[in-house]
Figure 1 (tube, rainbow, N blue to C red):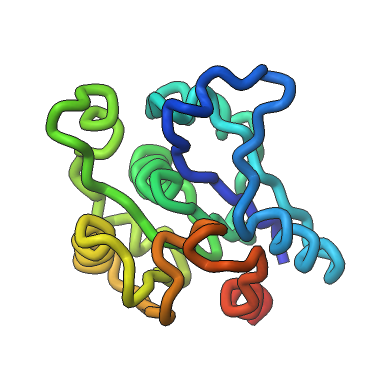
Figure 2 (spheres, helix red, strand yellow):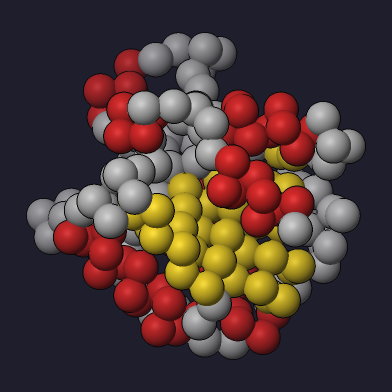
Length: 189
């Protein structure tokens, strides 16, 4: 099995003031998943994306392309990380083993030009031919725009949608736990 890359979501601007040395977005279920997969001998990378409270596609791309993604790798996005990965796959033409979207988001606030530039792009449907498997995790109690986002990605990319009960946007306060065995099991399958 190749490397598993996890692209974190976009935090609120309240986290903007954090020192660059202490900033971290590998939270919620990400540290737990990394530990679980590494215990099975799987390499996991969670790149720290630049200024994610003001996501910029070109800045994310520059950071992500420091890594050498291969056809054996699995890409996992959370929230806005999903929007980045799908766009990057379309732009790069890179083939990967698996694309897993967790609580994908593709809807920007209309009054936020930065986020609109990040989220509002046409999904390149050729991505589905670059990926052996697409899996989308959502929850029965995800926000309405999250549900719309799932439909946008699923309509363009196909794949399997897994809806779990009571997980919200797959953040710690919605899940009530850092453990995400369903995702671990999908990665290991």
